[in-house]
Length: 147
Length: 394
Ligand SMILES: [Zn+2]
Image 1 (tube, chains in turn green, cyan):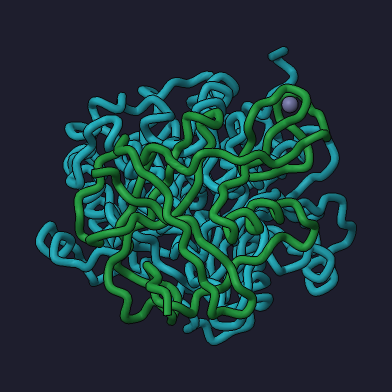
Image 2 (cartoon, chains in turn yellow, cyan):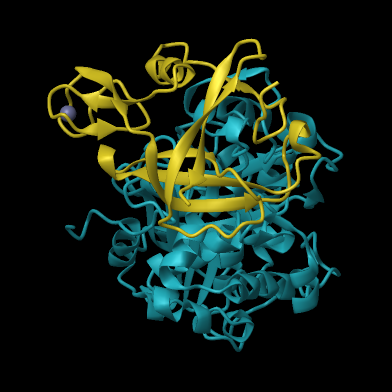
């Protein structure tokens, strides 16, 4: 059994029915972070959309990004709103900014002590959290402050 | 803006009303019946027949359909049926703006703005999804335990407080002011349930920086307002109360998915507030009393900064209880008790309270309420705001 940050039982992420974010979810299962990038103006965009908001090109792809970033904001949750987290205790959600990809942001959990202080601006690196025993299988992207 | 392209002084409020406000799930009536009851009462408050209403405007995908309302009430001729896009309370003042625009342009004569909620009948807000799988934008947040409005907005508020060194006590003052005002308002669900600093501090965290008392209630009930053209306003029993301006919208890519708005730590009013004030021809220092939507106290603070009531660096001084209470405070805030302590009717109660202040009918009346302002639904998109004014403002 792999150890997961949050208790199991939350809804499992699956690609959008229209396929918009499918490369992202597939990449995570292969320990890779794929983010949408415009083939015309070469800028990064997140969350994914069918059009580039900068140049209005429909020619968008997904490219691999080094899975590291900076804590842009954070929160410590104490009151669960889902039964799966009833006995979880406090947990930390972070918003991670990626300067290497036009400062797009991704949501994840911050690994480690849930009561740790969380300095905004801290460098974090990703951990791929595989949920291989689930049906369907999926992978979450979690974060750890660099020591 | 050319002078004829304005709502300023073109529309007035003929009547307002609400049902009894209930705790979540405790309304004895169906949601649609609550809507009807609020509308009938608002028409009675105006002294008109509901049959003479010719338009409905609402927000947040209200389930009480305008055609069903029109049939149920025997409306003679429905001319305007409008829904402001967007969730939460972001559309409250926007719906008033839409109604006012319809009247100003001659599309309708008498428009009811309303909101009805029965969560017992239709399920709660603020709860995580119970599905086995999840896709779309929420797939990128829910599996990490980020799923409720409190959790979505705390992320913005934390960043704002970090950027500007805002203390928890500033949020606390907002909550204490609302509960203070509710003690004088018999309609308030929290009437008779006062809050003090100790009770606030010892309350549990929901998600930092929100204690329990930083979060809005969840309620059942309905609220309605009757809008007519300004030339009819003096036909009614109330002192004239005009719409001076209304504005809705949000800044560049405010709705960018998965927390990617370029300007992130904002209540989404930065581009709207100048338009609001320009149309009303007032500035923040002219505002006599303010109702500012509290989904969470942090949103109130950020909204008020973005409407120029204080700068970010002044928050720790400005947000003190004494400044925020009627009638002695610099800027009496949420004088009915608001969403925290009167009722969470997706904020339409705030608009009603703003009108009652102009009419001199508030349970926490300020001395002179010539300019009475409402900020609706911070941190969602689109958001909205409106300003009401007395005869003296025209
Ligand atoms: Zn492009």
